[in-house]
Image (cartoon, rainbow, N blue to C red; front, side, top):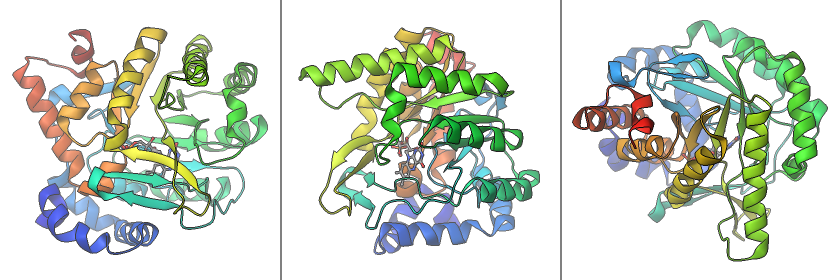
Length: 356
Ligand SMILES: Cc1cc2nc3c(=O)[nH]c(=O)nc-3n(C[C@H](O)[C@H](O)[C@H](O)COP(=O)(O)O)c2cc1C
């Protein structure tokens, strides 16, 4: 069991075996293991890390710690009870779409192992809204942390339908307008279209709404890059004006790689960490304190989480570090984060931002 719980042992003994397999095969194997919910519930004593200073709040949702699972790991809400046993403060399932979608052709995931990064071009494979609701109904009684649902679609009506269908089962809904792998999503980067979408969601929503932002362009040297950056800042302030509760910052960074069937995908992991920190800081300045920020991109350690919270985030999310470091990474991030807070005399997560 120490092999699973300890990130060092996981990296030495389990990851080499998993990384012999193609990424999607390794992921299916991990999902099979996560189907044994009672095993993970039993292991939760070794995976959890509780510290009073880590308890926090995200848009009114009480969290035992600020480390969430990012969207994309459990796309169809099929292993939620086990994921909530890994010690996360909250778990984001999805992205789910209204209809069943196959996603892009394979290969659609690559490892950049030397940089502890990934590139994915999934393109929203989804078993659809009805399947997600069935899974949520069955698993919610056994979840140990709040669940957020990530939804998306290619037009406003599809997203609104998905939001309304899933909202009753979760603590909050995150709208993904930013996957770089899905042709069609860019329509929501138009201020008028995003305004219509958010107004449509606001008409009947009852729970917190998060928006997953696209990253800043990787280069600002060209005029296009500067324009794209300004547009993203405008989209963020628009979200704040229209009452969005949290911005999730950010989705994967577009990148070309000919080994992918579709030739391009989204970069995640350590290679995006510094860009994520800069973006969190700039968005915090742009939106002020009215909106929460969930920082996501290359967070592997408590030190990384502390820096993201110092840059202006309220919570952090992880995905790539779970794949590179194994399930014990959640505990190790929380443990190191609480140690740093103790050393600095900080008694709550919100104090991190206030004092930096
Ligand atoms: C394999 C994979 C699948 C992903 N799928 C989704 C998704 O369905 N929806 C979404 O909003 N983000 C998705 N993402 C993006 C992550 O949620 C996150 O924003 C990004 O990976 C950066 O965080 P990380 O460096 O901790 O992985 C995916 C990322 C990866 C690596």
